[in-house]
Amino acid sequence: MNSQTYMLLGWLSILTSGVIYTLERLTNAIVFVGVNVSDEMFSAQPGSPSLFGNWFFILFLFLSLWFFYNSKKVK
Image (cartoon, rainbow, N blue to C red; front, side, top):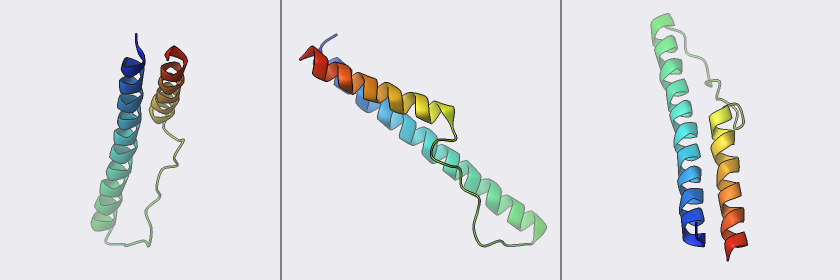
């Protein structure tokens, strides 16, 4: 593989990890609203997931860093 292929795979991995993290936060917010509406109790803040709580996010993040490293190594 050439340098551009590694760069493309790196950016796709970063994009994938961002989408996974965003969907996790969105799901958490929807569940928070659903629980508050059903219980008629409103708390101040939803419990948001930590940045490194999802293993797929970590996997794609490190995979993207590996692709970027290999793109520089191939040049």
